[in-house]
Structures are given as C-alpha cells and as structure tokens.
Length: 55
Image (cartoon, rainbow, N blue to C red; front, side, top):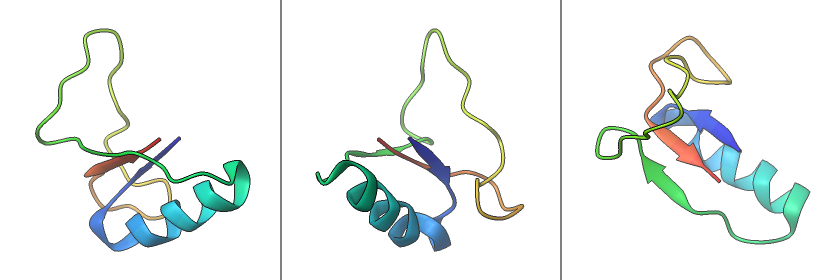
C-alpha cells in the first residue's frame, strides 16, 4: 500500500506491480473517507500532500 501525491502515482504503481505482480487499485483520497483509518497527510516519496492510495 502506498499513499502518494499526483506526481508519484506512476512510481507507486510500478512498485506495487513489481512487488505483487498484479495491478493495484487506485483510490482518490479526496473522494473517499475511511471509518477506521486516517491516511497519512504527506506523500510517501516527498513532502507534498497525499492525494492517492495505491493498494
């Protein structure tokens, strides 16, 4: 699972495919709320705001 900004979505997809050998689902964090989990505020690759969950 990767939480990333728009710039790093492709990188996160590549990492996911390399690790799991399957296509990930991409969730827009602006449109989705989680009842039991708060996503990180920052991208896993940089300091920008996290916008997508690659899972």
